[in-house]
Length: 258
Ligand code: DGL
Image (cartoon, rainbow, N blue to C red; front, top):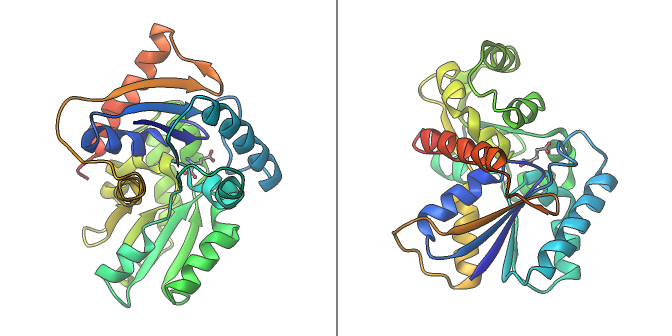
């Protein structure tokens, strides 16, 4: 089955990376909207028009499903895309439910982009889970920039995260939920900074499980499936760019079990 993964940039590779491990026989298209990244600091209207253009392109590739591997695009546009297209469209949901089910009555910090944390979608999720007293929201926009330039472990990354995270009383928190797919590249630094009891949760497995459920795919083990990469609507064929993408995938391998 041909399945598209879409993100503002390379964050969504973390979701594809998980899919390639458990659905190795499928044919994947990965669309990074590199002309327009970052989305998180743009207006909702701008993001909607970027997503609209990307969907038009992806639907024309005859894909059987689209995974919106971007929390920001999901927050802004997934409803509208579902109204417009009938193929399965799977969005991202921050793993707040997993955190609250595993650790009831403990606080959870959801880190995401500014658009995601100010959007209605996360508000509705918090209301649905009755998590008003437990969910705190935090934007970490610099991580998107660091990730795009493959700056994963510098002193600047660590100082930024220490500065942003040191104001919390972590004894009250069970988990940090990564509500932006770009944040998966920094799990080692989060792990280094946060107390050992704070779990780091992402929404990747939940999204791929939903993809499997919606498409009746069979999880298997085996070699990596085929994948074509697009930067915005341009097929990536340049060896240096393909190596850039491989470097992201190697980084995600290192972060996979953290
Ligand atoms: N990777 C995206 C997300 O999951 C968006 C990052 C951005 O473009 O600002 O939210």
